[in-house]
Image (cartoon, rainbow, N blue to C red; front, top):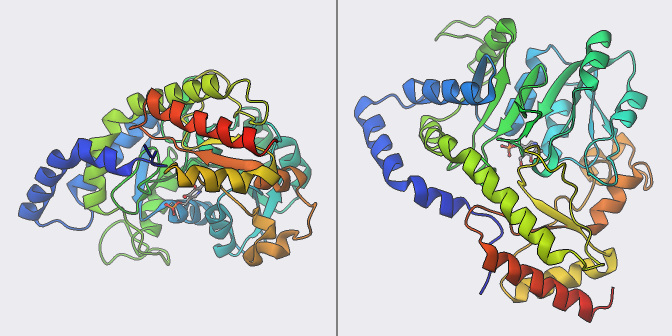
Length: 373
Ligand SMILES: Cc1ncc(COP(=O)(O)O)c(C=O)c1O
């Protein structure tokens, strides 16, 4: 029996009929850009997050880019983020004209090291983007007064952490802006691309609404040079149908993580992910660490058994050709570099059950035993 890596198809099955009904209704109304479907999702998502509003945009990369633009970030500014994030976070900074500045990650949590963030701060630092990587929230609370005192904006990259809550407060609602991706395999995934920015400041809300829509909140009004990056109504309909399931899906992912923990505990060669034991990890990915010399063989063997895994991400940002200029030498970010060689993402999704976890864990034990890690 194989095990799929992620579960967008299973989620689609759950909303299939109501979504087709909603699409038929959309066709009858003929509002194919913006309109009630988008507004209603934005309102529901803002209520879920407890923020003043949410602004639907084309994807998570644009959410980050437009968030920085709304804050006035541009040439001459610096924005700090994690060396082990997905490349999109850094692309968004780069395309504003600002300089991305990388911080290393904590070796145990994989999350951005806030002490390194402070060490990398200069008078040009305009924003910090903590990344809630793999679905686990960075505890940004201690950073907020520090940032406020320096006029630095905290923009959360919550692309992987929709539904996570730390001390009861949702990911994306802590910083001045919270950015989300609705890429289909995300915890709250659309049926194509989509994204949103959570915002409470009325002036930033207005700025974001303009930036996503050719510089104006209404048609043929162009207050600023804007962009075209709007959440598609077909996606908004799917997201509205999925949002009510999100908390249950997060609980399910945490259950699967606990089962993995139970099945893999005692396998000395597999290091399990860190977890505060609360709601602050929603396991977008279940990432373990193994001996780098054994990793590729492990992945190949699992694949032969139909068990799909991934490495997120195999190359830290500063070692990619695109961003080698940010400190490309090996050893610049030792934790991010070491982890990139050790991490493996195991299957994790809402259609997984105990039997699937046991299958994956059994095969891992078999393979790692055989290669004598
Ligand atoms: C951490 C992180 N930031 C940003 C993004 C960009 O989102 P999108 O793919 O919707 O542009 C992603 C998506 O993969 C992500 O994982």
